[in-house]
Image (cartoon, rainbow over all chains, first blue to last red):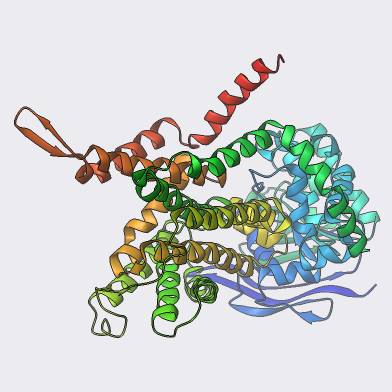
Length: 246
Length: 350
């Protein structure tokens, strides 16, 4: 146990717009946490800041006792934080297997993959996300649900201890969501700490034991889903301020 | 463990070669190699040996050059419009060491290629902050700067001025031996480039081409690998450049640094088809022989209209490029291979 991720007074300004404003939270090792907020709340920016794709204007991020503020993305990945993107990304002219071989060739991925060989290791990951029968085809012809699985497969290739999932359920049918939920739950059972975003409350409520809510870049609530869902400020953020409402 | 694996690979190699030879691509490659081996002995005619055969040598030099461009742009996705930098720099270094330092030719070739690698590093590091078309313009600007520096800048006299360096020894006085030296180096270069593109390193290059952010998020140090791609590509471009210098037995700014060389590489590789590598060889042979044919045709007279066809070659090249881009954007190699494969299957009764 112990704190794995510590975010302190994180602020990110884009010109005059403050996307993330003095945001602080902590995540324990092995936790399963959701980050919620209406569209434009700054959830993706928080993820970009943690994973190094954007540099914070001020504030500190510590991972596993190491200050990772402003490190390059690949270095952060090699420390054990993997992420997926809100819009699916893939190496579109490489086969699914090669798509997962790439993260297995990263510094951190190599440590576990070199015993069995990158390709064998990648195909075991493909099997665990349920795509092993499609190893040789390129991702351009995959349906959206499988692309979401591929995203997670790519993140797993780097052998992460902390997984940032940015809206993994967007655009999926109910059945596809269930399959993916099962996959993510299994990863959590294997000991991976999971930090997940979503803008639809209902999806996340059933999944995670703890949610952090944000609105307009600011921290507004932290706690079990039911408690946060009934929080007045959270409701206002989602539904707007109204007399005699909620 | 590693040693055993290597041993196993080496033991399996003849068998691998045998089974590869019976595949369509393997058979075709061997056929091409046999044709290229036989060609120098087909005629004793002086014009054939001293004029026609060197065209093959030239085509093979440009094949290495175009393949190196394909490795950088087609495989790694780093668009370079200034590949003549490496081509020219290597040629100049090679020429300098032979003419002014009295180094043996082979040492000068190695030094020239390594000089190109150094330039790849030098230009790669600042340019790799640029992406896509901006990188193309950045490399183009670098090559123009170098051209002007060598041609007419106030430092030009240090860099041998517009005359360049001449009086280099050629690889061999016998065109046939020269042909075979280049032939062997072409084969080696192509094997190495193709193996790189198929290796794990090549897969990483392709991942950077397809999605750089995604490669970053997969823990790949993209900057490092882009610089590596620049250096490998520069090495082969440099090798081709030194051979070109020795082929012409002289170097001069426009001939070796000219933007035209960069565009030749682009033309050849895109005619054959990007990412195919072997397409670069096809494109090189096509353009070198097209140029040769146009020069051979020379002046045509239609009534009292006199046209010197060889002056129109660039217009014709550009026209071909437009046609290729319009009708075969993946290059002509893949469609040709597909048709040949159909024919092969019919002949084999499949």
